[in-house]
Image 1: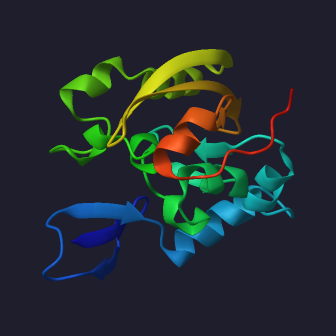
Image 2: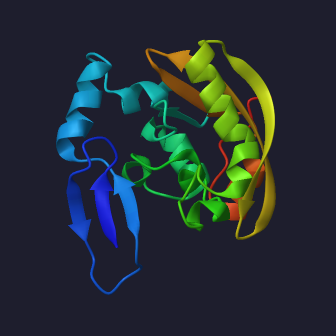
Length: 176
């Protein structure tokens, strides 16, 4: 498996003999660029101040940064999320189909992808979009909200409990 930077496409590592294909991450140079883009406070630090699981994605649906709360829900290290598409980050089983997240036949109807695209294209926020993530544990309901953020899209998992349960993660304390 080759792992390449999602932004500059530089080869990050290659693991011969393991799974065939290409996955994505973020090289240190692109990571530093995005860290500077958000000013003095690192983006991850800002996201960790928010009381909800959240990620910032680019126009292509790739994760630029994620909160520690989201990493806990997804049961993955935060650094591993950078450069992944939303479906890959949320362990959508369809993201492993040929072409990956966003390219499978079912992706055209993906509420998460369509919401990110809509917010990126229109600059208008979307609140409470109901979606399903097809995981290895089955169809899992999620509710997301998305808002524009300096050319990127901030995606919040409004009801992370079901996804956390399906992925073995930890849901944050209820805000109710």
